[in-house]
Length: 113
Image (tube, rainbow, N blue to C red; front, top):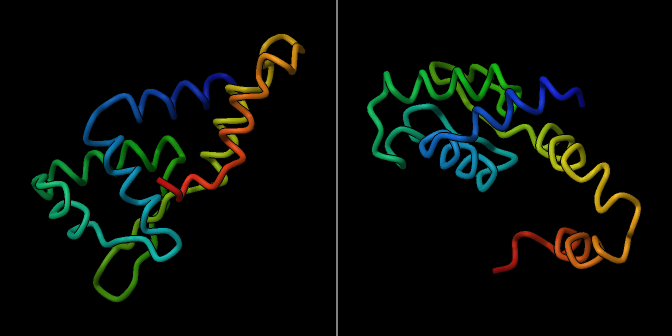
């Protein structure tokens, strides 16, 4: 992943509604959610949500697909993985023992609370 792509993705997530939108879509993988349900779940007006979804789409963090009269949005988990790997690529400057706790935590199922 190039630095510019990572910056675009991080900037897209650096806004509360977009971050919550992305997290909501991650929770609804692999089915995704229609735009209206996303707006309702987050109590955001439809036109505002449309703008947020556009930012996340341009950042490559989500994708959309028309299904009948609805547009279904899905989180791009491969892009999320690439972003996390980009951030950790030079983890601890080759001193694996420093990064081991972080990597161990990441290897645990994030679905557990």
